[in-house]
Image (spheres, rainbow, N blue to C red):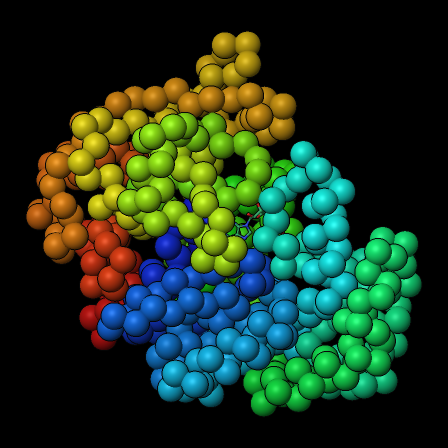
Length: 438
Ligand code: IMP
């Protein structure tokens, strides 16, 4: 039952989609377990660009089992559009299975997300406004609509009425919006239900069977550890748990079913939306990395905030996830910088230095990075395919990361193409290596 969880080790957008895509080719199934269409994966394959939001990354391989697990929140409009687009471009989507227990994003969730942000004013989180938070809130309040409800008109209508009741006041500004009409909403969502019906399944049992049959399974995380609702930079976080433990909850397996946990990190750091970011770069250098790294959101198009690599936060993410391996993406973006800064400590408001990720919000909000400098390199890395082909300074940079975090680097990204990766020596000891040798 070889299984690998892939998680973001920073604030999301680390390149999980590309790594999942690489591993998915030799795997039997890809399972998404949390988040929703706040995520966005860009996959470049044979010169074609694919932007996926809800679909597990393995969908581009014919016949692969792709599961949207119970922990995901699904906007059925987005999902049906994505399915249609994939089919139009000739992709076989027959392997998609959607958990009947996954929660559904309703039109009022989108409205409440936008209204909630407006109400917060300068304190806003900078959400993707996709209704993710309000949908998870309804799940916790036991007022959620689930995928299975889309197949029963009577139940659906009843549940919508119950969900709307406590929101009457906050939805008053949208009272005239036709999307909130009970009949329209019920009909629209029944239509989505019919369109998705062939894919709806008991996905928990399906994942058990896959594991029992010794299939290779990839659990594909969305967002990143520092956006975790429990362990991230609360309240500037997403509303689910993007850490490895959630792979179990969001799909229905126990922790013992997980064999390896890969954390994906960029060679620098980015963050979208508001919230503390101790290593944020100001000015020209930030602009330069943003342009070179194409740091604009797949989902919202927003310019990402850019910073130096934060090893304190990365070590924290390694612990939260019990990482067994690190994949470092976008190393090529750092070429041409004379010196690189890596954050190994924080300095607090009173000048105290500390080397652990602060649990207290006030401390975190005032923390700034303390750096060590390491030499940069001039060479373009796009053609490198082995560690030996990397400049010494780039190898030293990778070694510094894995030494500090205490987790081996198994994969390095040197460009956007799927062939632009380096499998390191350490990768020989992973399941993925065996899978790739299959
Ligand atoms: P929400 O998930 O839309 O509620 O947004 C909450 C926070 O998580 C905001 O700061 C978003 O920018 C951030 N966020 C959500 N999804 C992603 C992602 O896939 N990548 C990066 N940031 C994300």
